[in-house]
Length: 372
Image (cartoon, rainbow, N blue to C red):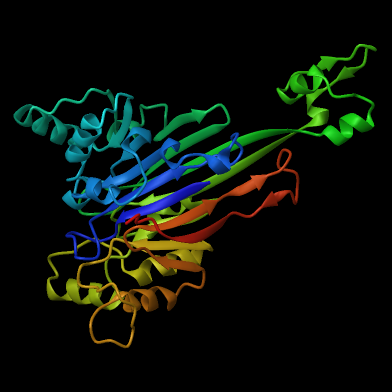
């Protein structure tokens, strides 16, 4: 399961209600012992983009910089990265020592180097910097993918898709795979095999021999259930179709919708020499409808749109964004606000992907993460 917390949902500049872009993604393992009582500060999480003020937004949540596993930066525009140096400095001052993975354009490394020397920034933890340009290079065998092992059951894979914007921009596919071996105790009992140390070995995937000489195959008594949750988070992008391949078997797309279609058309018509290279809500909605995407969260809204929802108002607001998307999209639609939380619970592949065994993933709005 992936738990999303929107830390910033404004485009370009912050407003009184919205900070600039940042999204936290907690990686929850429902199979781990005591998962229901798992302290929130012990959950690994990712940060997608880090606009100015992101660390201040985090103070209103229960997320801890000590459990931050990786930061992914979609592109170099300031509303997506200006908060990174300050957040790293605060992580250092809070006592973090564990290494941190940073997946970003090469220019982000140059930015950090330029700030480190004149400000005497000292980080007591290693940064494992992965340049997107190198990850996507034809010579790189990773093929734009990064794997992070969170625990023995729990794997996180991050893949990168180039998008279309004024600078090189990218989308990140986040795939969480959790496996659980479930021992079929009823079958063991029915076969006359009492509870013993053999049961534990079978559950670990080992074939065993009973005292009376019977060979027991682990595959006959263990179900290997796999829960797979996948979301795609896009950076700034004027061509949603860039994500077509990345969205196969995806539970949720998070995509910018900076304008309504009408406003975007007016901006382009007013200055034909300037294309903001952003998407409208309608453009994203039509794409999502055409490919059969069931769940869509829109974010990164122009500061011109007020946070209230009233499509009848003459003041630009979220109601106009919502109607723009709903005019072409019939799936589950949400417009993100700062501190909104969503739970994405992916499909469960029961006992090796037998036909008809797969449960469909779902997305649930949880309310606000703001703790004060």
